[in-house]
Length: 73
Image 1: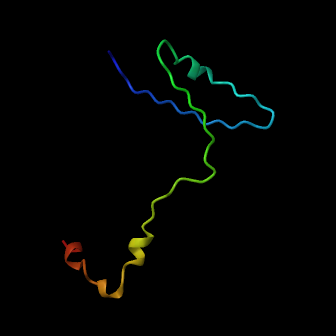
Image 2 (image 1 turned 120 degrees about the horizontal axis):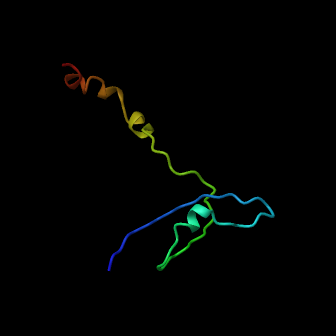
Image 3 (image 1 turned 135 degrees about the horizontal axis):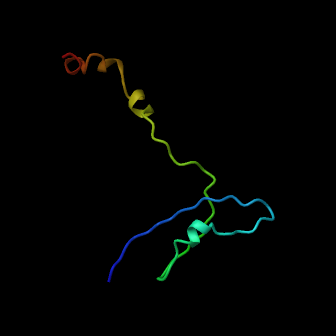
């Protein structure tokens, strides 16, 4: 048996009164086999963006000069 993981994601926005139609590029890629089609609402929140604020806030005056030996060539 040959297996292959395939995941295709489309993001769409429907206006009031619009009907869902699947893109032809999607339906052309579906052939014989077993498929799972999942439709779910898009989350209203944005994904978490990484930040270095904690590192910068953790720097104190006692750390001054701590890395001086590593920055000189």
